[in-house]
Amino acid sequence: MTQQNLVIVDTACANLSSVRFAFERLGVTPDVTADAARIAAADRVILPGVGTAQAAMRNLQRLELVETLQSLQQPVLGICLGMQLLTDWSAEGEVNCLGVIPAQTVRLQAGELPLPHMGWNTVSAVGDNPLLRNMDAEAWFYFVHSFAVAKDDSTIAQCRYGQEFAAMIRHKNYFGAQFHPERSGQAGAQLLKNFLELTDADTRA
Amino acid sequence: MLAKRIIPCLDVRNGEVVKGVQFRNHEVIGAIEPLAERYAQAGADELVFYDITASSDARVVDKSWVERIARLIDIPFTVAGGISSITQAQEILAMGADKISINSPALRDPNLINALVEEFGQQCIVIGIDSFYNAETNAYEVYQFTGDETRTQKTAWQTRDWLREVIARGAGEIVLNCMNQDGVRKGYDIEQLKMLRADCPVPLIASGGAGSMEHFEQVFKQADVDGALAASVFHKGMIEIKALKQSLQRAGIAIRPV
Image 1 (cartoon, each protein chain N blue to C red):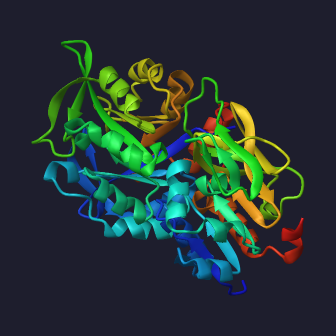
Image 2: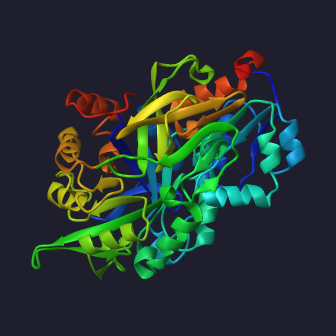
Image 3: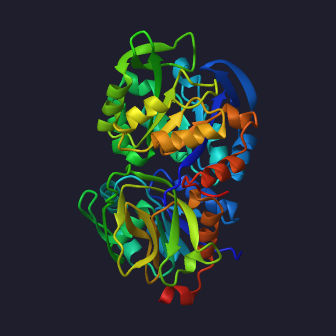
């Protein structure tokens, strides 16, 4: 794999190390930083996140990273809460998010099923999804969440738990995955590899 | 469809994996990393590491192995054992653990649950409950300090009440250790798990009693738990995870194939 400058935004959140280790297993050493200039200059940017949308947005504001993250041109991947932060708004704390993917985060309507939605579930691509290349049409990924992005035009993969929801979303160069590729075995590793191999054509759509 | 989870549990003491019978007489099984890696490759959906001496010794888990595991495996894992402060939880999570599981410290200070949930989010806070069926009183009683038999003691809590309490405080998942069944491989406590399932709106993991593949099928079908945790049947090679998953799939249970 070509060596490239991969930045993981240091949101000081809990899954940051496991995301870093997952890339290291692929032979890439990410730069974990909250420095706006280094984030802006990266070839690829990962926005990890667990916890609540409200706390995470407060944290990004404190770090003065909101504008930087909103104006990135390179491929960006938000993971779990990181994906939700890419949307316009989250019902978790009723907070405005980064607004780089036109979608909304709402409480998962799981009916009688336990919440959080926790464990391995199948994900299937909706339309063209360059991050799900080279894997089964129904791939298994590990989820942990109680809020989810409703299915809409930005959905590029779906999953079902009580209701269908967006497992992955995308707008231009911004991609989001609700599940944790860093903890999803071979399928997760393939997804991260696909992210590193995205071409300019892939991010222009 | 969300898969039912098969969760090997590695009891850790002094950096080695050990296993006791009914929480006692621990024997050494082996080093942590090779076992963890083997289970991840064999198709385990998740791993739990319990530092069984930690709570009783009033010290936190030896931390170095947490990061080694996080680097090595690509499935989620939980660390349990003596985590009794935000700072300790932060350290374990920062080293790459996906979830932390709290047992005795939550009984000592139930507010700890709220504080951890507030700080790290519900999704990574697991509450372990050690429940013992007292035949004399016909009641399920919560025990603490079960890692050390000289300090194991009954609490004032009945299991159902404590379950409701921890859920009200924001617990994201429950691991119910049925102490009467632990290590004796005669099957999960279906009756108790079924009863508590109705009171548990968060994921519920069965622990204690797995001895055969049928036991897993029973606990998923009859108690509708989200995951089944087991130790000795995996450590001793009595059940291969791949064969177990194939058998459960044939029985119509949603399983992530190996």
